[in-house]
Every structure is written in C-alpha cells, then in structure tokens.
Image (cartoon, rainbow, N blue to C red; front, side, top):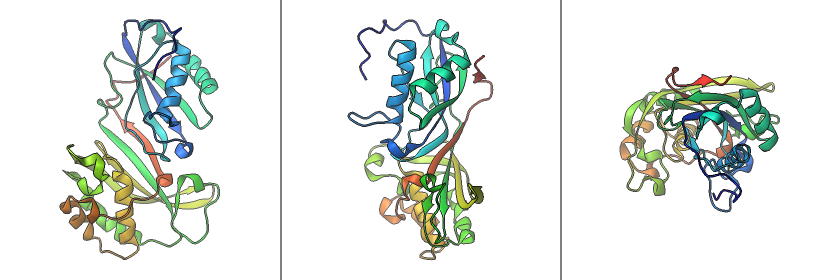
Length: 274
C-alpha cells in the first residue's frame, strides 16, 4: 500500500506496539491485504497510518480467510520511542474513530524491538460453532454454521485424538497452498463443547496448534461433521491424515462458523500500555 505523499519519512524504529484486535469478518475478503479487495489488514493499516502519519509494517498472528471472525487476533507494528509514548486511552479512542464499526482494537501492548505477532506466537486457538438443529439461529446466526441436522458429538469426539501431536496435515490444506510448502503442524488440543449465545445452544469445536494451514480448521470440521452424520466411522480420521491428500478429507465447512479466539505468547513479552 502506498503511503500518502505528505507522510514524513520513516524514522528509526525502537520498539513494537502490539494490538489485540476483534472483528466480524462477514464483510471482508479475509485478513490479508489484496489489491481491489476490502480486508481487515487494509482497514487497520489505513487507521494506524492516519494516526502516526507514516507508512507502517503490519504483522498478524495468523491470517484468516474471507468471512472468518476474530475475538483476539494480534497485530504487531514497529514504532519509535516517541510513538510509544502515546497512551493506551489515546490509541483506543483514535482507533474507535478511525476503524469501521465491525473492527475494534481491544487492548494495546508494548513489546521489545523486533517482536513479531506471527513468529513469537507459541500457539493459536480457533473455535468453530455449529447450530445442529432444525430451528434457525437468529441472534448468533452470523457466527455459526446452521447445520439443520443433529450431530453425534460422541462419535466426533472419538475422532479428535487422531488430530493431536505433530504430523502432516496436508489432507486438510487447500491444494494450491500446499504446493512446495511444508505441511507439518502440531495440534495440542482438539475438543468439543457447548455454549449458550443469546439464549441459543451452540455446539463448539476448539482446536489449538502451533500454526495452521490454509483452510485447515474448516476442513477438519467438515471431516468431523461427516463422522457426526454417521457417514463415516471415527477411525476414518486416521485414514484421512495418513493419506496426505485433500481429496481424502471431507468438505470445507462454511467460513461463518469459524472464529480466531486467541494467541499464546511468553507472558514476559507483552506489557499493557499505560
């Protein structure tokens, strides 16, 4: 993105600001900037550059696809000592004014020079939400997959242990994104639960890993739902992983049900801005 001509030249960058960002991804073509598309990163860049009056280098903890939401995405931006002096209150008020209403910065941290929201992350967590009933969800509809048919949670849970550990998840990766790239990842947690949103009962699938491939979580969910519909047995999950072939897995679940929930960092790395 080209900075406006009246921006000052880029000064010496001495530290890093880290923003915890939430967004409703319904109106965006994903997080990453794309020519001619409205993206979360594009809106964040525009807002931050307007306040700092200079171009910035913006790094996120994990890119999300079009239509995917976040409650705790992390973004890092190298800054000067003078910019680090801007208060937390100033940042929150300025970003509230400059960002669209479906994107919010909920916290501001300071970190060492060279800190990266992406490369210093120890794990990322996503939750996928499903309304598996014949009654349409209303107030929660923008953040769940309305499946219409009940799912066998016990069968899907029985398939989850196969996902744990470090292994090749190529079967769950968008084919074009896997070409010439490593597809091994480590999953530390994969489990089902329930929550109530606006009085509506929601089935949840939460997964935590060191990193994720393109469409990996949504394809895992689609595969689990095939098991939950009794189209496949829980043991099939192991077969899908071992195949290392996208055609072996189930369909990709809709983006609307997926939310980026958080990132784990070394607690000593981030300090809430004054």
